[in-house]
Image 1: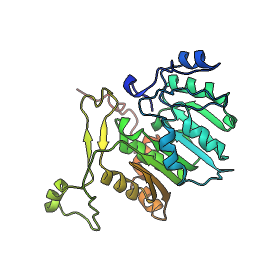
Image 2: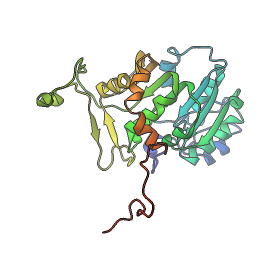
Image 3: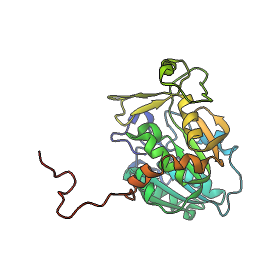
Length: 287
C-alpha cells in the first residue's frame, strides 16, 4: 500500500522515459512500477531494482493459470497497477485498491493506454476496509503490504476471508533457519521453545527500516507459513523468494470459526449485552 513518505531510493523519477508520453510520465513521477506501454514507452526504465516488478511477475506468472477468463481478482496495494493489468490480460476482472492517490493517478492514467485496462477497477481503500466488501474473490493478491501495516494479523485475517480459492502472499522477511513445525499444543512450561531458531516470529520496527516509517513488522518465513496454515490455506507453490501461492482448504471453516466473534466486532457486528434504561453511555462513566 502507500507509504507515509515515499522512499525515493527505491523509485524512479520517470524523467528517463522517452517517446511521445515522456512528459506525462515525468509529471506523474516518482514511479515504483515500470509499466511497459503499447507504444514502447516505459514509466521507470531506470528503476533501481531493474525492470520492476516484471522480474517478480515472471516468477509468479508460471504458478498461475494462463486463462483467468470469468474469474474475479482483488489486488491489494496495487500501486500503479502492473499486476492488475497482467491479470486482466489473462481475462480476469480485477478490483485493484491502494490507499495512496499518487499511485492511483498513475494507474488510472495507464488504464486508458493499456489493452484490457477496462477490465480493471481502481479504488482508494485501506486494506482494513475490505471488511466492508460483500463478495469473495477467486484470487487475491496480497503482495508487498503486510510489513507496512501497524495491525498486520488483523489485515491478514480480513484478506484471507476474501480469498475464495487462491491467495498470493508476499512480504519482506528476515533471514531465518529451517522453520519449526509444531504438531501438538505447546505446554506453558515449554515456552522456552519460543526462542528456538526457526520459531515463527515477527520483529517490530520502532522507528524506521530503510528510511521508511511504514515498515512496522518484519516476519520470518516460518511466521508466514504458520499464518497461512492457521487461516486454512495450503501452500501450493513457492515460485520465488518470499512468494507463496496458496489454496484454501477444507480447514478454512474451522479456522474461521475460532476468530469469527473478533472479525464480527471489527465489522461492527459483535454481540452486545442489553443495557438498562438510564445507563451511562459507554466510555462516559465516573472518573
